[in-house]
Image: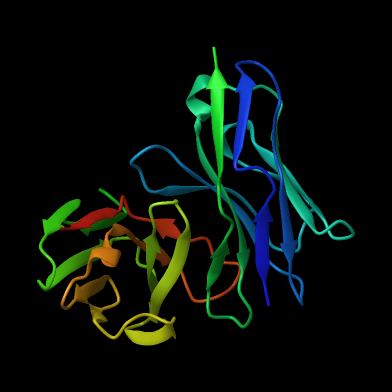
Length: 114
Length: 114
């Protein structure tokens, strides 16, 4: 069965420093992987997705993630954090079959300090 | 010009009542979804429809009944509301059914059952 684990429930960085949000996945086949962001009291917005093309995926707002099959990881990075990056981040894996089912990680809260 | 919209945004009601949440997308997508986000921010899929056909029906109490009158609308009716139904309910849509499809989320409906 497919599953996803976000290794940190809370990450705190200073503005201008790098961001690393860690995600490991488990899948019996080659999955699609996504990162979504949720700002307070808002819906979810897609940051980026991997669907078996280039392993280094660039997303919006300077975020990128690298698919590493050998490590079953899909960590999210950004070189320099901005105050507006403070939000909840979800790593997501596609479910089995072709139903469109998404399986969400538990979320990582990113705090950005001035 | 909102892509995925939900009404109402907030819903406060008493235990035992019946309520509905409406969702509309103007993206021309074929597939729509309902998700539940609990108080710990964990997101889980409830239902999906593709061209008005039920595709995903997770282990959800049969008090919850989705209805898709056309492919632009997916409504959620909840009978005999319970305290545990308190959550944020998100509607989403994707261009078509499939594991690699990007899902576009609505702003959410915050349901509080007293």
